[in-house]
Amino acid sequence: MEGEGLIVDAEVMAVVLAVLVIVGVFASSQTLFAGRVTEPFSELGVLGPKMKIGDYPRELIVGEPFTLYLYVGNHEGKVTYYAVLAKLGNGNTSVSAEEPMNVPVFSRYEVVLQDGKNWTRPVTLSIEEPGVNHRLVFELWVYSEDARDFEYHERWCQLWLNVTKPAVP
Image 1 (cartoon, helix red, strand yellow):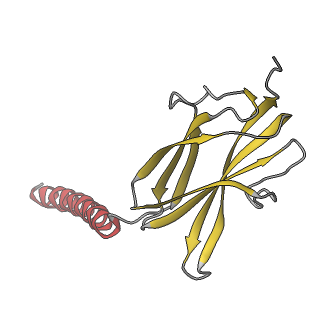
Image 2: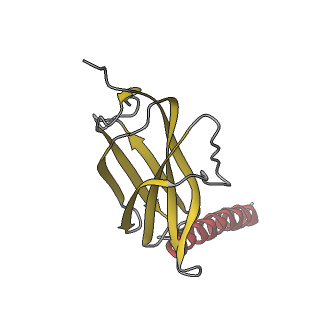
């Protein structure tokens, strides 16, 4: 019976040792990987005139100024130089994560952001052409040191707008 106590003690010690090894591996892995970005990403958003999602203008008059807010967030794990390009198209103009909209740039905004920081900026625009279903697109571009130019970052937002001529008195 005396030997059984030693066997139980040895089993308990083995379990305790195994738990300590697991805790030690977990703690050291947290220390080694602290501060690393495991899945870098950037954010792009467009907010309405009250800085909210969903209060966007839908009906505008030619030349009438309207204000939106651009939002860019950096979670790339490094300082990043962004450009947001505003473009105006229609229902037949395509844009996707793979391809930016192939129309002239309507307006351009640039910002350099530290990792973990974001930027919200009011932008006042006006559209000079009447039309139904104007497609106002904002694309996110990132400066590439390798290419020494901005590259499309596969993120975009859009608003659909109807723009009418002013009423004739």
